[in-house]
Length: 303
Image (cartoon, rainbow, N blue to C red; front, side, top):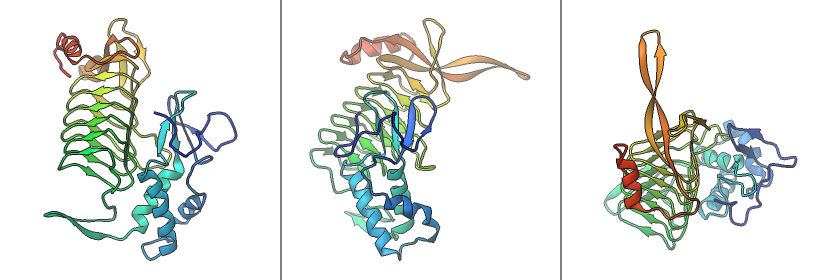
């Protein structure tokens, strides 16, 4: 994933206001394509409500830029590999919940009562009936949405597949040619605005019923076996060497599955969840589903 279209890349060097967020992440508002007035509205958000039409118009225009893909809540910096969070974009979304009134709407026989409408920008996307994409989320041309849910602030890259009953949570960032298999749960995060969302980099495959939450990251080309749970604090262990790898990250071009590691407590020895890296893949290799299933089935799981 790269910097948003029409928005300048935020670099790690310079004078931008930033805070380090775990491993390889940063937040900033300097260089955001959104206007600085969003920060001013945020500072006095306690005074605002649906009757503040001028503020509402400014926030709607800002979230429209996220909805169109011209601005992103977060992305991967090309030079450093770090996740960059545009805090101003998150503030705009949070302000929308404060400023927009509740409105009744209807799609066919389905009726809704919410502050956030559905997006109207799905050009070039295959959208199967039952798919829901909220305004403020962007899905790139070439993506496929089976009956699924994409929440506000999320980004789904070109060629991605969001399979049946998969959920892309608020502000989650899904790269190009990613496959989210059936029932995958990609967690969302809106507050605080500085919080790092889940990032799934290009070419990754997330197996059925996996949960990737709490700002965890799946690096480029990684394969995560069915049912794996990955959070930002999950221990990640190389199954061949026993080495501890960066927590909360599925390494690039690897095959990962859920596992347990023994820990001794006063009441006895218990298994705590972890993620095991079973195999390293050649960088840039095409995922052969049959070959991946062979690797995973050797360890009692599947894709």
